[in-house]
Length: 593
Image (cartoon, helix red, strand yellow):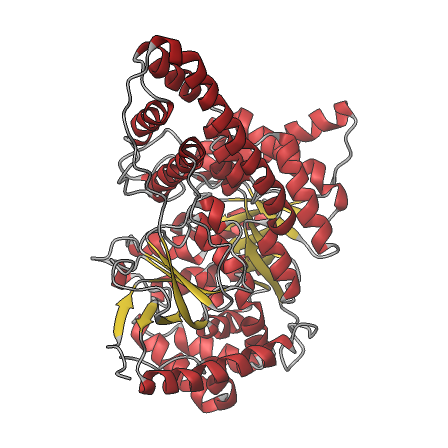
């Protein structure tokens, strides 16, 4: 039998790993709507039919909410809450009923027309948060219309084990129930690294590639698909040579992962005995649980803005408190550092846009202008601190005044809580995220007024080099090994130590094995990475002697270009730690087209 021609599709690597399986084309529900004109005596029955369909869809969504809450955590179920609020939106229901009663149109047409008007402003939006809004609307619309029309919704529940889902988009209500026992891989034309589906794929460790142009029309059910979640490749009908190459790579990858799992219970301590606090960057409970399983010794960065964005509204004190307590309990006695809302920038504040959001109304600036929102969050954090392992971190600090104002608000909230009889940690540590050149240059002054510093290398690099890494024309200039960035990192670490406080790193720099070598040499105390990187980071820490790392870092700080720094790090690692290099790069450099 003739082998079908191999085709390689490129996209965004969203969730690492490899998958080989048979394609399952998920096709969105596209109802064939008819516009019917009702007779006046039919109106009441049509309204009742519409309300019954909404009630049925609501019942299904509430069942789904319970399941997601149980499997993924209460915070993840917020995404289903958004759909429920759309489904029961009074304006949508009233407008649909008005079209039925006044325009004498059938329920399917009236409802579809109402949602079409609602989705219009966000359809085709460039920003992820608005595109997600459109996907939510389409998902809810499909649920109600399928009930009205007596159609079955397409579903991934009937998948055969080992399937690779290929689709334009996957509705959030389907993505919420991705089953790793059946779904080997995921390839979507839409979506992005921060979409709900991407987060679910990463949390469930399903290899995924998104942003693959026009693949759904070029694949047939049952065709073989190879997913490379590291390089962002989907290979349709892979050749025998390709399969052979990948089989070797996948085998090495699984051996590598198995060896890393053995490190889970080991301490993140260097061969010369220096303990490094190895923590995780998370934003959902499911990620915190994964970090714990991977051996994290705390949460170095708990992002809270998604609590706001998932709900499309400010979360209440009780809602935040519940999540903070759960994470703090999970990690006791290790610390959980909660970063206050970092809204703005690429995390768009609902209903607000500006010309240059990364330089605009963002993070601490936004919070200091919205005291009600900020104090509600501080109350929740302080009340959760009763477990004595929570710390507060303020993002985007650029001036001493911002830190002082934020600290004064913490004192105000403490007074309120004392008056109300709530317990909290009186010695709660307050820290600053160093992610602007101003904060790095003022690190000594900041360190005098807080208990810790944590370097956010992504924004620090972006602001230092004046490079928007989301802009493909200049993204190649974004390099965290740039000597100017290294000087600011070193200055921050030294300043913190001179003032007797600890300093960590929670940006992508810390997830780069070469970066970890530099950080050990510069003297960092804590490293925080995504949950999946915990084992690799621990392996590097347990291999590199700090004396060697110091020599390498001192040499790197004398260099003039990022390329020189990277070459030095590669050369020294290959020369001094060849076994580590073979392990770290076991899945790289193989299988290219």
